[in-house]
Image: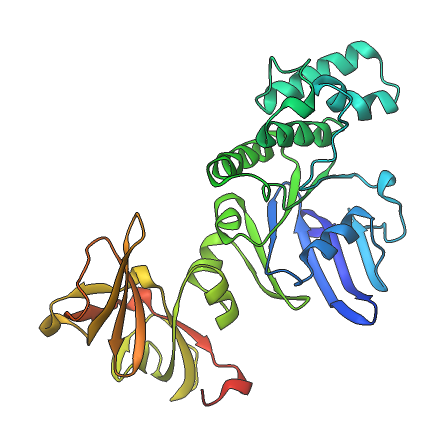
Length: 352
Protein backbone atom coordinates (compact mmCIF):
# COMPACT_ATOMS: atom_id res chain seq x y z
CA UNK A 1 0.00 0.00 0.00
CA UNK A 2 1.39 3.43 -0.89
CA UNK A 3 3.17 5.66 1.63
CA UNK A 4 3.33 2.88 4.28
CA UNK A 5 -0.44 2.97 4.84
CA UNK A 6 -1.20 -0.06 7.01
CA UNK A 7 -4.92 0.56 7.71
CA UNK A 8 -7.25 2.29 5.28
CA UNK A 9 -10.90 3.00 5.98
CA UNK A 10 -12.79 3.75 2.78
CA UNK A 11 -16.20 5.45 2.84
CA UNK A 12 -17.31 3.78 6.09
CA UNK A 13 -20.89 4.36 7.20
CA UNK A 14 -22.42 2.96 10.41
CA UNK A 15 -25.82 3.52 12.03
CA UNK A 16 -27.21 2.33 15.36
CA UNK A 17 -31.00 2.22 15.71
CA UNK A 18 -31.37 4.52 12.72
CA UNK A 19 -28.89 7.08 14.07
CA UNK A 20 -25.83 7.66 11.90
CA UNK A 21 -22.56 7.37 13.84
CA UNK A 22 -20.11 7.46 10.92
CA UNK A 23 -21.01 8.86 7.51
CA UNK A 24 -18.79 8.22 4.47
CA UNK A 25 -15.76 8.16 6.79
CA UNK A 26 -12.32 7.68 5.21
CA UNK A 27 -8.94 7.56 6.97
CA UNK A 28 -5.39 6.36 6.24
CA UNK A 29 -3.19 5.18 9.13
CA UNK A 30 0.53 4.79 8.46
CA UNK A 31 2.73 1.95 9.65
CA UNK A 32 4.68 2.42 12.92
CA UNK A 33 2.86 5.62 13.85
CA UNK A 34 1.21 6.53 17.14
CA UNK A 35 -2.18 7.76 15.92
CA UNK A 36 -4.80 9.18 18.28
CA UNK A 37 -8.51 9.46 17.51
CA UNK A 38 -9.54 12.46 19.61
CA UNK A 39 -12.98 13.90 20.20
CA UNK A 40 -15.89 14.31 22.62
CA UNK A 41 -18.20 11.47 23.65
CA UNK A 42 -20.38 10.29 20.78
CA UNK A 43 -18.09 11.55 18.01
CA UNK A 44 -17.54 8.05 16.57
CA UNK A 45 -13.96 7.40 17.68
CA UNK A 46 -14.63 4.13 19.56
CA UNK A 47 -16.88 2.94 16.72
CA UNK A 48 -13.96 3.54 14.34
CA UNK A 49 -11.68 1.48 16.60
CA UNK A 50 -14.20 -1.38 16.80
CA UNK A 51 -14.48 -1.47 13.01
CA UNK A 52 -10.69 -1.78 12.67
CA UNK A 53 -10.68 -4.52 15.33
CA UNK A 54 -13.50 -6.46 13.64
CA UNK A 55 -15.88 -6.22 16.61
CA UNK A 56 -18.24 -4.23 14.41
CA UNK A 57 -18.93 -4.47 10.68
CA UNK A 58 -19.72 -1.30 8.71
CA UNK A 59 -23.07 -0.88 6.93
CA UNK A 60 -21.08 0.21 3.87
CA UNK A 61 -17.48 0.90 2.94
CA UNK A 62 -14.29 -1.14 3.22
CA UNK A 63 -11.52 -1.81 5.74
CA UNK A 64 -8.15 -2.47 4.11
CA UNK A 65 -5.11 -3.88 5.91
CA UNK A 66 -1.89 -3.68 3.91
CA UNK A 67 -4.07 -3.27 0.82
CA UNK A 68 -6.17 -6.38 1.54
CA UNK A 69 -9.91 -6.09 2.16
CA UNK A 70 -10.57 -7.39 5.70
CA UNK A 71 -14.06 -5.90 6.10
CA UNK A 72 -15.71 -9.26 6.82
CA UNK A 73 -12.75 -10.91 8.59
CA UNK A 74 -13.43 -11.88 12.24
CA UNK A 75 -11.29 -10.26 14.98
CA UNK A 76 -9.08 -13.29 15.68
CA UNK A 77 -7.96 -13.40 12.05
CA UNK A 78 -6.84 -9.76 11.97
CA UNK A 79 -3.26 -8.73 12.79
CA UNK A 80 -4.49 -6.42 15.54
CA UNK A 81 -4.94 -6.64 19.31
CA UNK A 82 -6.99 -4.43 21.61
CA UNK A 83 -6.35 -3.02 25.09
CA UNK A 84 -9.58 -1.98 26.79
CA UNK A 85 -10.18 0.52 29.58
CA UNK A 86 -11.28 -2.32 31.86
CA UNK A 87 -8.18 -4.45 30.99
CA UNK A 88 -10.20 -7.75 30.76
CA UNK A 89 -7.52 -9.75 32.58
CA UNK A 90 -8.05 -13.31 33.85
CA UNK A 91 -8.45 -12.87 37.63
CA UNK A 92 -7.57 -16.51 38.45
CA UNK A 93 -4.19 -16.31 36.66
CA UNK A 94 -0.97 -14.65 37.77
CA UNK A 95 0.90 -12.04 35.71
CA UNK A 96 3.02 -14.56 33.79
CA UNK A 97 0.07 -16.79 32.86
CA UNK A 98 -2.06 -13.81 31.81
CA UNK A 99 0.64 -12.62 29.42
CA UNK A 100 1.38 -16.16 28.20
CA UNK A 101 -2.25 -17.03 27.48
CA UNK A 102 -2.27 -16.13 23.77
CA UNK A 103 1.02 -17.90 23.06
CA UNK A 104 -0.19 -21.08 24.77
CA UNK A 105 -3.39 -21.00 22.72
CA UNK A 106 -1.10 -21.09 19.68
CA UNK A 107 0.59 -24.16 21.26
CA UNK A 108 4.08 -22.67 21.10
CA UNK A 109 6.89 -24.60 22.86
CA UNK A 110 6.98 -23.72 26.57
CA UNK A 111 10.64 -22.66 26.39
CA UNK A 112 9.74 -20.11 23.71
CA UNK A 113 6.72 -18.96 25.72
CA UNK A 114 8.88 -18.43 28.81
CA UNK A 115 11.49 -16.40 26.97
CA UNK A 116 8.99 -14.23 25.06
CA UNK A 117 6.79 -13.56 28.09
CA UNK A 118 9.78 -12.72 30.29
CA UNK A 119 11.06 -10.20 27.73
CA UNK A 120 7.62 -8.59 27.45
CA UNK A 121 7.11 -8.39 31.24
CA UNK A 122 10.51 -6.71 31.57
CA UNK A 123 9.67 -4.24 28.79
CA UNK A 124 6.51 -3.03 30.55
CA UNK A 125 8.40 -2.63 33.83
CA UNK A 126 6.96 -5.61 35.75
CA UNK A 127 10.06 -7.79 36.17
CA UNK A 128 9.75 -9.55 39.53
CA UNK A 129 5.93 -9.54 39.41
CA UNK A 130 5.58 -12.73 37.34
CA UNK A 131 3.91 -14.75 40.12
CA UNK A 132 1.71 -11.93 41.45
CA UNK A 133 -2.05 -12.39 41.19
CA UNK A 134 -3.45 -9.61 39.02
CA UNK A 135 -6.30 -9.00 41.49
CA UNK A 136 -3.74 -7.81 44.08
CA UNK A 137 -2.18 -5.24 41.73
CA UNK A 138 -2.82 -1.52 41.27
CA UNK A 139 -4.69 -0.16 38.26
CA UNK A 140 -1.48 0.99 36.62
CA UNK A 141 0.17 -2.39 37.10
CA UNK A 142 -2.89 -4.21 35.74
CA UNK A 143 -2.78 -1.99 32.71
CA UNK A 144 0.84 -2.90 32.06
CA UNK A 145 -0.16 -6.57 32.21
CA UNK A 146 -2.93 -5.93 29.67
CA UNK A 147 -0.47 -4.16 27.34
CA UNK A 148 2.07 -6.97 27.67
CA UNK A 149 -0.60 -9.58 26.94
CA UNK A 150 -1.71 -7.66 23.84
CA UNK A 151 1.85 -7.15 22.55
CA UNK A 152 3.22 -10.63 23.22
CA UNK A 153 1.54 -11.96 20.06
CA UNK A 154 3.41 -9.35 17.98
CA UNK A 155 0.38 -7.70 16.36
CA UNK A 156 1.01 -5.30 13.49
CA UNK A 157 -1.42 -2.85 15.08
CA UNK A 158 -2.36 -2.27 18.72
CA UNK A 159 -5.73 -0.66 19.41
CA UNK A 160 -6.15 1.17 22.73
CA UNK A 161 -9.64 2.24 23.82
CA UNK A 162 -9.26 4.95 26.50
CA UNK A 163 -6.93 2.65 28.50
CA UNK A 164 -5.84 5.35 30.99
CA UNK A 165 -9.36 6.52 31.84
CA UNK A 166 -9.55 4.66 35.18
CA UNK A 167 -6.17 5.87 36.49
CA UNK A 168 -5.49 8.86 38.72
CA UNK A 169 -3.87 11.96 37.23
CA UNK A 170 -0.27 11.28 38.32
CA UNK A 171 -0.34 7.67 37.16
CA UNK A 172 -2.02 8.67 33.90
CA UNK A 173 0.83 11.09 33.11
CA UNK A 174 3.41 8.40 33.89
CA UNK A 175 1.64 5.90 31.65
CA UNK A 176 1.44 8.40 28.77
CA UNK A 177 5.24 8.53 28.70
CA UNK A 178 5.47 4.76 29.16
CA UNK A 179 3.09 3.99 26.29
CA UNK A 180 5.03 6.23 23.91
CA UNK A 181 8.28 4.53 24.95
CA UNK A 182 6.79 1.07 24.36
CA UNK A 183 5.45 2.10 20.95
CA UNK A 184 8.83 3.46 19.86
CA UNK A 185 10.64 0.38 21.14
CA UNK A 186 8.30 -2.16 19.48
CA UNK A 187 7.76 -0.21 16.23
CA UNK A 188 4.12 -1.35 16.29
CA UNK A 189 1.36 0.94 15.00
CA UNK A 190 -0.68 2.24 17.96
CA UNK A 191 -4.21 3.53 17.35
CA UNK A 192 -5.36 5.25 20.51
CA UNK A 193 -8.82 6.55 21.42
CA UNK A 194 -9.28 9.36 23.95
CA UNK A 195 -11.26 12.51 24.72
CA UNK A 196 -8.28 13.89 26.68
CA UNK A 197 -6.45 16.58 24.69
CA UNK A 198 -3.31 16.42 26.84
CA UNK A 199 -2.97 12.68 26.26
CA UNK A 200 -3.25 13.21 22.52
CA UNK A 201 -0.71 16.05 22.46
CA UNK A 202 1.75 14.16 24.70
CA UNK A 203 1.87 10.81 22.91
CA UNK A 204 0.82 11.12 19.29
CA UNK A 205 2.68 11.35 16.02
CA UNK A 206 -0.66 12.10 14.34
CA UNK A 207 -3.95 13.31 15.83
CA UNK A 208 -7.31 12.78 14.13
CA UNK A 209 -9.82 15.25 15.62
CA UNK A 210 -13.40 13.99 15.27
CA UNK A 211 -16.84 15.47 15.86
CA UNK A 212 -20.25 14.16 14.83
CA UNK A 213 -18.82 11.14 13.00
CA UNK A 214 -16.64 13.30 10.76
CA UNK A 215 -12.95 14.20 10.73
CA UNK A 216 -12.39 17.86 11.58
CA UNK A 217 -8.60 17.88 11.16
CA UNK A 218 -5.63 15.51 10.83
CA UNK A 219 -2.11 16.60 11.70
CA UNK A 220 0.82 16.50 14.11
CA UNK A 221 0.21 17.73 17.68
CA UNK A 222 2.01 20.97 16.78
CA UNK A 223 -0.12 21.51 13.66
CA UNK A 224 -3.37 20.77 15.45
CA UNK A 225 -2.54 23.13 18.32
CA UNK A 226 -0.92 25.97 16.37
CA UNK A 227 -2.93 25.80 13.14
CA UNK A 228 -6.50 24.72 13.98
CA UNK A 229 -8.70 24.42 10.89
CA UNK A 230 -11.92 25.57 12.54
CA UNK A 231 -13.40 26.89 15.78
CA UNK A 232 -14.26 23.39 17.05
CA UNK A 233 -10.63 22.26 16.83
CA UNK A 234 -9.35 25.55 18.28
CA UNK A 235 -11.64 25.22 21.31
CA UNK A 236 -11.27 21.46 21.79
CA UNK A 237 -7.46 21.46 21.68
CA UNK A 238 -6.52 23.84 24.47
CA UNK A 239 -8.16 27.20 25.10
CA UNK A 240 -8.59 29.95 22.55
CA UNK A 241 -9.77 33.49 22.03
CA UNK A 242 -11.81 33.40 18.82
CA UNK A 243 -12.91 36.71 17.27
CA UNK A 244 -14.41 37.83 14.00
CA UNK A 245 -12.05 39.79 11.77
CA UNK A 246 -11.41 41.07 8.27
CA UNK A 247 -8.41 40.01 6.19
CA UNK A 248 -7.71 43.25 4.33
CA UNK A 249 -4.75 41.84 2.43
CA UNK A 250 -2.05 39.19 2.68
CA UNK A 251 -0.41 39.41 6.13
CA UNK A 252 -2.78 42.19 7.23
CA UNK A 253 -5.85 41.60 9.43
CA UNK A 254 -8.21 43.72 11.50
CA UNK A 255 -9.97 42.51 14.65
CA UNK A 256 -10.92 43.82 18.10
CA UNK A 257 -10.94 47.36 16.69
CA UNK A 258 -7.28 47.36 15.66
CA UNK A 259 -5.13 46.32 12.68
CA UNK A 260 -2.39 43.71 12.96
CA UNK A 261 0.38 42.17 10.90
CA UNK A 262 0.01 38.36 10.69
CA UNK A 263 1.68 35.50 8.80
CA UNK A 264 -1.37 34.29 6.84
CA UNK A 265 -2.06 34.86 3.17
CA UNK A 266 -4.20 33.59 0.30
CA UNK A 267 -7.50 35.14 1.43
CA UNK A 268 -9.68 37.40 -0.68
CA UNK A 269 -9.22 41.12 -0.11
CA UNK A 270 -11.41 42.26 2.80
CA UNK A 271 -12.58 38.67 3.40
CA UNK A 272 -14.43 38.09 6.69
CA UNK A 273 -12.52 35.57 8.78
CA UNK A 274 -12.22 34.14 12.28
CA UNK A 275 -9.10 34.95 14.28
CA UNK A 276 -7.61 32.60 16.90
CA UNK A 277 -5.23 33.83 19.61
CA UNK A 278 -4.11 31.42 22.35
CA UNK A 279 -4.27 32.80 25.93
CA UNK A 280 -0.57 32.14 26.53
CA UNK A 281 0.39 34.10 23.38
CA UNK A 282 -0.84 37.45 24.72
CA UNK A 283 1.76 39.60 26.46
CA UNK A 284 0.48 42.00 29.11
CA UNK A 285 2.24 45.40 29.18
CA UNK A 286 1.61 48.93 30.43
CA UNK A 287 -1.53 50.48 28.86
CA UNK A 288 0.43 52.99 26.77
CA UNK A 289 2.61 50.20 25.31
CA UNK A 290 -0.25 47.94 24.22
CA UNK A 291 -1.74 47.25 20.80
CA UNK A 292 -5.03 46.79 22.65
CA UNK A 293 -6.06 48.20 26.02
CA UNK A 294 -8.38 46.54 28.49
CA UNK A 295 -9.43 46.17 32.12
CA UNK A 296 -8.73 43.02 34.16
CA UNK A 297 -12.02 41.52 35.33
CA UNK A 298 -10.72 38.48 37.25
CA UNK A 299 -7.48 36.70 38.14
CA UNK A 300 -7.23 33.01 39.08
CA UNK A 301 -4.02 31.16 40.03
CA UNK A 302 -3.76 27.90 38.04
CA UNK A 303 -0.53 26.50 39.48
CA UNK A 304 1.83 27.16 36.56
CA UNK A 305 0.25 30.43 35.45
CA UNK A 306 -2.43 32.98 36.26
CA UNK A 307 -5.59 33.04 34.17
CA UNK A 308 -6.98 36.53 33.72
CA UNK A 309 -10.10 37.73 31.98
CA UNK A 310 -9.55 41.11 30.33
CA UNK A 311 -12.46 43.21 29.03
CA UNK A 312 -11.64 45.08 25.81
CA UNK A 313 -14.10 46.75 23.41
CA UNK A 314 -16.96 44.45 24.42
CA UNK A 315 -14.91 41.24 24.15
CA UNK A 316 -13.60 39.28 27.14
CA UNK A 317 -10.06 38.01 26.47
CA UNK A 318 -8.62 35.01 28.29
CA UNK A 319 -4.94 35.63 29.10
CA UNK A 320 -2.42 33.22 30.66
CA UNK A 321 0.66 34.73 32.27
CA UNK A 322 3.20 33.86 34.97
CA UNK A 323 2.74 37.43 36.31
CA UNK A 324 -0.61 38.49 37.73
CA UNK A 325 -2.59 41.72 37.46
CA UNK A 326 -5.24 42.66 39.99
CA UNK A 327 -8.92 42.95 38.98
CA UNK A 328 -9.68 46.51 37.95
CA UNK A 329 -6.16 47.16 36.63
CA UNK A 330 -5.79 48.74 33.20
CA UNK A 331 -3.45 46.73 30.97
CA UNK A 332 -2.10 46.79 27.45
CA UNK A 333 -1.99 43.63 25.32
CA UNK A 334 0.65 42.83 22.70
CA UNK A 335 0.04 40.07 20.11
CA UNK A 336 2.85 39.19 17.69
CA UNK A 337 2.31 38.23 14.02
CA UNK A 338 3.13 34.55 14.70
CA UNK A 339 0.55 34.40 17.49
CA UNK A 340 -2.37 35.30 15.21
CA UNK A 341 -4.01 32.43 13.33
CA UNK A 342 -6.60 33.11 10.64
CA UNK A 343 -9.40 30.63 9.86
CA UNK A 344 -11.95 30.64 7.07
CA UNK A 345 -15.27 31.77 8.50
CA UNK A 346 -18.01 29.14 8.23
CA UNK A 347 -20.71 30.27 5.81
CA UNK A 348 -23.44 29.53 8.30
CA UNK A 349 -21.89 31.88 10.88
CA UNK A 350 -21.71 34.97 8.71
CA UNK A 351 -22.72 37.47 11.31
CA UNK A 352 -22.18 36.29 14.85
